[in-house]
Image (cartoon, rainbow, N blue to C red; front, side, top):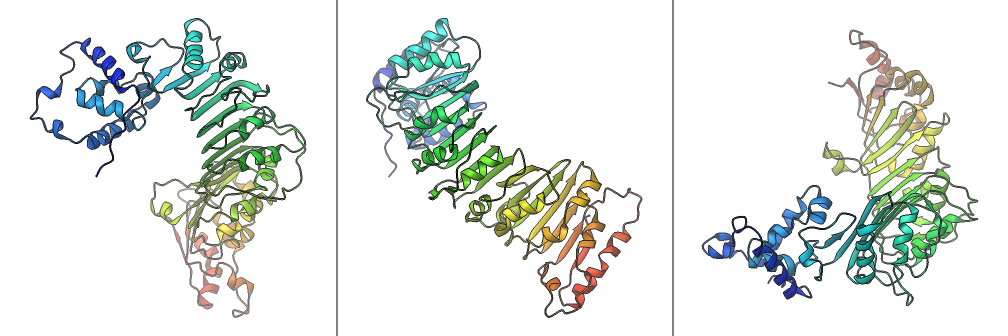
Length: 503
């Protein structure tokens, strides 16, 4: 038996107001299907109608503008009484609400006084908030704070101070808070922000703060214990141990599933390795952009074995100290690796077997781009991934628009390939294949006990892509000949390898 549709408090008033609004519409615009009882749609159960409406909602594009700001869902309520009843009784599932922003509302005036949730949307407010725009914002935040479900603000620090004045009370249903400032906001958020003098617990699920100092939000983060989606863009970090402060906040977020961090600069003295590891067992999405020193200090105190989506972007070569342990604890197994060298940087992408089978699927684990700093930079990163590379069966190495001679001397192929003991297929594109051939063992003097035989022992094929040092008319036979000593030695050892050109 399907679960009943839960009714919305104030539903009768809302229905009445909307019906009045419908009656004011041009009678030729909407037709009540109840006048045509033989229509199949009139016999659909409410649960099925709800599924249809929700599918329609998810296909709306752009969603925030059409569904949230222009309230296209009201069109559904104009069809018939049954549709109105289903829509309003399922306001949470259908994400219904009234958006309050700088633009003056139009046709929704008749239901502004109803019980629907309120979305505060003041993005792009780099001009002064004044007049009716300021009045609407104050009215919604001050007099209807018990209905405010989302607050989104992007603008100047001065405009945010106007919001701050009317948010010193409790917001019991608030589950999403997005604040982006014009420049680094250093004013410490008061304890009463969104909580009031009684300091009740926040019920936020999504928290996104941009261009703000860590010191100004630490106390606020400690109260956000129900957050599942956290995104922080921090301009600077100060103090003797800023990473310890952030780790303390994360320790109080046991439900966290998504963590995105961006640290644009670090003017701090990082403390020693944390004694305790903060377990984030439900975290499946981790993204970091910025200063590598702060990243290593953060992951030193984190454990997230359930990670599926990892995206780490450095602004310099990281000190590889704690990152390997953090990565190695991830339970996911990887089947293929893509290493891309592009001009002055390189990156690693890891794919599970299902992602690799789906040729159009994107890698969910990405590390880099990493800027070049020394000859060992590639080995440092591959070393950080070493445990995850032990299960990899396919390696793709691609060179794109770059100084070819530079990378030829920068890549110690033998050391890189040693991290792939189960590698079966090695594919290149845009590489100097002669350099790769020189790095492979040429003979095995003692096949039964020789380190060379253990090197790439599972390898079955090498696929050679286009060599940028050759023209289209250049013969490619010499490239295959360069691999002949390795192929012959493997054949004699009973581990044949096939070398061929990409079609």
